[in-house]
Image 1 (cartoon, rainbow, N blue to C red):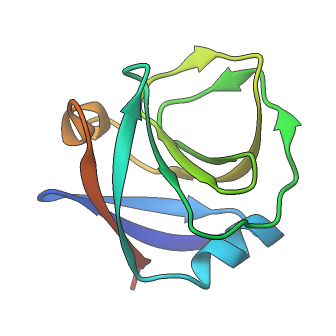
Image 2: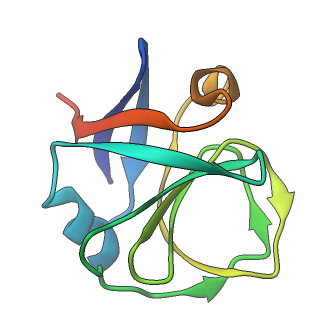
Image 3: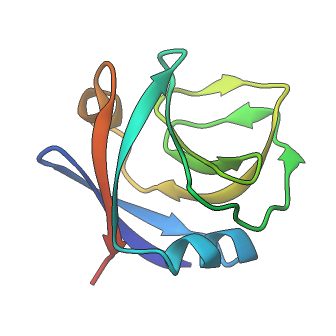
Length: 117
């Protein structure tokens, strides 16, 4: 696992990234600041300019704080838990999600991802 700092406004979250090809490809792009759009009032997403490696699986359950890749180029942060029929590549998860929904708020947000430490 690799720790990543995600800053959204003045809220800083720590995420743990899994040791897989998709996560490693994303980590190689850090630091990066992106504008993430809202979808369905349960996730923020960003379409990456380049494709990342995938290992897509039908995950069935999304947990608040999950970081995933939809398709090969869509980075997603989930801020609500729910069931899903869709397939994703797992990237990691945010450690403390108690303030995540408030930090992400409504509409688009700017998020900065950088290696923790």
